[in-house]
Length: 203
Image (cartoon, rainbow, N blue to C red; front, top):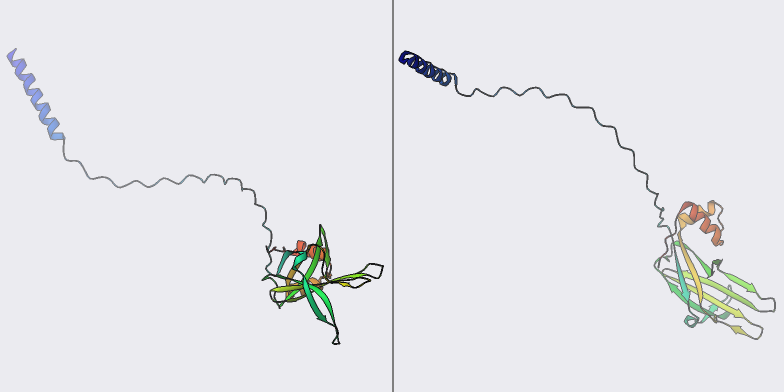
């Protein structure tokens, strides 16, 4: 029995020594393996809907509207053409930085949705007549009004009027004339501008 116990003890000790002897230092890390091939790209997503085009602008054409009150008119002696005679007109001025000497200036009388180009010379059929004209210089348009009555001249409007001033660079005005646009016809001008350019309004 003692021999068997001694034998088992020797075997156990031998196993421990063998285990410890097999456990050596950790080896160096091996080289990194070759990277795998990339997977195929996913399908492109659907394109988004295009946004609406913005309205084209044009710095060569601008317009501004003005209300001229009945009380803003004063008398002005206007010289005749080719002679020294003068006549009295009512005058009122509107001012804007869109009005410059190197631009084509046109003025329209606005009544609701209707516009009439100046000058306006209306015969009333009873010997009376009404006239509305304009003169311009840099920064300013001067309106000239006269009502010629049977009994005398009335120089000032009795109520407020609205006018629209359109200022166009000469190069743009030349293009409009070349396209056959009547520069005294507001609708033709607007139709041309709506087809080709926008008209920024100046408040």
